[in-house]
Length: 207
Length: 388
Image (cartoon, rainbow over all chains, first blue to last red):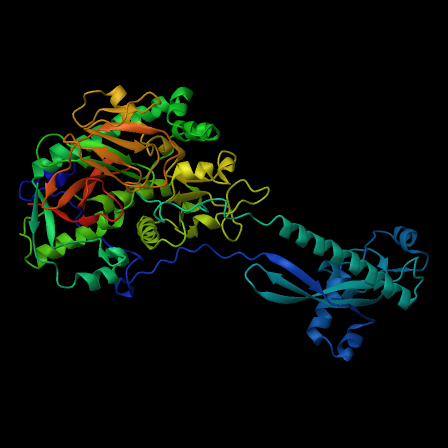
């Protein structure tokens, strides 16, 4: 029992003293509380364009397809994907004699974020850049650049054309894998209308 | 208990519009009526409505416990077997419930008689809990009612407390709210509950019942962004849920439902004969029995109701004088019960029905519906009440 019931000068009351609405009324009732959860986006579809290969950032800029900063970002990002080895021997065993080199300070900075550390990599001959268009379940489309290093190895023996073909193949394989994973996601899309699809007697279920 | 004609508030339709009560008129017919009110004494409210409501609620809780521990009783209530574990577990783990409404026949003297329980998808909540309260305050302010007039109504206050209680127990204090598409009244009722939830500090996103998703590998039902729904309020009955395409997944997934599955026991008119069986002779209960193949045709003085029915559908009654009344409907595939006929009080052409609200486990308010017929339907009008 609340205190009120025992306070002689206050009449006993069976109703609440104060009520308000937080969001249901017109704007005159002021408060709006939008109870929507953060909207999370999911990618439902990806399209790739044909990648282009460049031998240097300057080469990329000169093609006049991407901005300088896109060319530079793609170069740095592709450096991160170059295989790294702790000894020259290991690197040459994998990529062929004379194919490997120690990174320059600039390359090391781009690949690992520091100039320190001694490691080896196949010599970079250039990189590839393409763009990727993603569509989401919210109907939004956005474009992203993707990239791939072109480096010297046993298979291409330092031949630029072969090297860039191999890079194209790797890109195609990776893109196929992404496509199929998106497709798989799409297949695993949620089922709906599993509740409430039958109609009620009077169009409602309250009682 | 009296029905007293009074003037309407001059501004009420504009106010209703402003306060989100767009269904005060349904299909051109009035639903909210305030050219009269039902007048009660404090004693009538406390002794005849409030106390019996709490008593019957306790009996119901006792029965839920019995049914949860008996497959035979589950079967008797025609509860689908794939739901038994969910029902039992939701009760055993103490899953809280939000609310319920008991419908009583009461004329002002003698005990109120329980006609049925609406313990799963009760509506007329906004009208009873909010708009009726606003009516009283304004009717007093405008001199339509005396200053000492009161109302049996702390419904919203109790709802906020109950929501806060739920909020402390659910993931991220987030309770989704759902109802079916294309029903303005139900959407408004759910909107009101969202409002109450927000006032209780919960996050209260909305999803249509039809949009609730089933996602491969997910261990909850999902929303339109495929995010897990940890807790979900539904204005959609358990007996339908269980039979729906996703029904079989309910026991497998971790989504918490409000009302919880154990409410399926009380939203079923089979509870009425069980109550009579266990508490026979209780002053607030009417004799009730399960119908079976050897039951004779419905005799005078009895009412026939399907286990599952809404808004008066498929109810048939014969008064002691032999007058037959029936409402058609689609609910013909469930078993039936029979209940002794008890007249609702008649005021002019109107039969009045008391809807007595329980929130959490407390009786906390009422709303009156009236109908020219003896069976209260979705078209029955809501008329406010006051204690004077």
